Length: 609
Image (tube, rainbow, N blue to C red):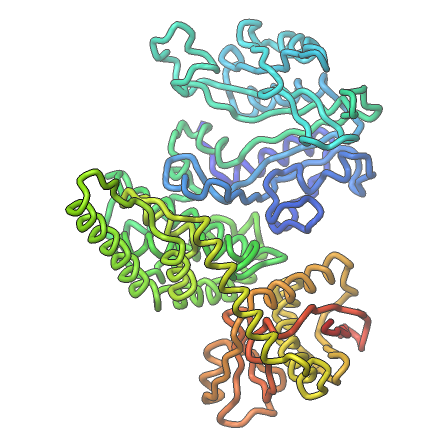
C-alpha cells in the first residue's frame, strides 16, 4: 500500500485510540537528566517511571509518536537507512492487558490496517535459558491468530529479551519481533528466512512483555505486567511504500528535490552527490528538531550542543562538496518546518524565524573559517607526505606515517572550529587516521594553561570587592542565555541588581521553575565557565548590534553607539560592564533562590563560590 507519513502517524494513533488508549503526545527530544542520556533515544524512555510502577495521569493504556535522536553512528548517515532523527510509534499497557490482547492487536494492525499478508508474516520469540522459560505462550497465540508455525522463530536472549543491563529491581522480559519479506524471491541460500544475511526480510516492529523483575539472583514474576510496543515510523513508512531507500519517502522528498534544484545534480545518479544530499537533509532535519524543541538547544562546544554543532558543521562541509553555499541548509530547513512536520510538530512553525536565524548564525560562523581550516588540513597532509618521502629516502625500511597528530587536530578544532569527528572523517577520506588520544592531551593541556593563567592573575585578590562585582557581571549574561536555552527563547531579562556578594536577576516566566530546570541552568552556566571562553568587548552602532541579534534589555537606555560583550556564541549582550577576561575566572555558579517577583516575573538570586 502507498501511504504518507502524516497518514501513517494518524493511522497508528487512531487504531490504538479505538482500543482504549490515550494519546499522550511526545515529550522533549532533550534528555532531562534522569535517564543518563543527552537525547531521548526510544519511545519508551520518557515512560520509564511509569513502567516501574508510578501511576500515569492518563491511565493504563497509552499511545504516542515520539521523536528520538541517536548520534552514536553519525558517520553512517549517508547510506540508505541511517538517520540521526527518527520517530517511534508506541503503545503501552501499564499493568492492564497483556500478551493475548497485544498479539491480536499487532496482528490486526498489520493485516487489516496496513494490508500485509498473514501468510508472509514472521515473528521471533524468546527461546528460553536457565533463568527464564521459552515463550511458548506468545508463540501459541501467534499460531492461533493465523501465523504459520514455520514462520515463528525461537531466538536467544540477545535477540528477544529486553532489560536494563546491570540494573536490579527493574522490569524485564521477552519480546516478539515482527518480520516481513521485501520480495517473494529467495536469494538462493538453503534457508532464505529472517536469519538470512541477504536482507530479504525486514523487521517492522516489536512487542516487549515485561513480566519479570530482575533480581541479584535472576528473575522473579512481576505482579503488574507491562507491554511496551515500538514501531519505527521512518522504517515502516519506507517498507509500506515498497522502498529500500529511506530517503525516498515523503519525509525527505521535498528536501532532496530542493537540493537537486540548487546543486544541479540528480539524487538517483548515486555516488558522492547522493551521499551528500542524504547527509545535508538528515543533519538539517535534526538541527531543526533540536533547535525548535520545547527545550531547544543551540550549537556549542560541549554536551548536547556539541553534538548539534558537529552535525551542522558536517552538513555545511557537504554543502560545499555539493558545490553550493552552506546557506542552502536554510532552504532545506524551511521544507521540513513548513511542509513535512508542520502538523505533527506545531511548535516548529511558531519558532521558524528563530530556528532559521540560529542555523544561519552557525553557518556564518563556520563558513568564515572553513576555507582557511581546509587549507590548514591540506597543509598538514602535505607535511606528512613530505616527511614520508624524506624518511623513505633515508631508510628503505621506513614505515610511512598515516596518522594526523593530536596537536594538529587540536589546532583545527581550536582555531578553525573543526569538531574532532570532522577531522577524523576528513582524514579517513584520504586513507589516514587521527591521534585522538593526542588530541585529548592537547585539549587538557590548553585547559590547564588557561586555568593557571586565570589563577595567577587573581591570586590573593578573589575577595576584593571590585573583582567580585566584575565576576558577577560576567555571570549575569551567562545566566540570561542559560535561561533562554533551558526554559524558552522568549525569556528576557527584566531587571538585575549586583552586589559584591550576589546577583539578582528578574525575567519573564509564567510559573515557578522546577528543581530539574534550576539544576539544568546551573549546569549550563558552569559548563560555559569550564570552557574558559574569552569575553570579547566591542563598540558598534546600536542598529548593527540589533541586526546581529545582540541582546539588549531596555531599548530606550541605549545611544547611537553601544558597548557589547560576547562570550563565544553562547551570549552576546549590550552592557556597560565591567567584565572578567574569560569565563574561567568565575568559579562555581550556584542558584540559591528562585521566587516570584511580580505577576509573570520570576527572580533568581545566585552566587559564585
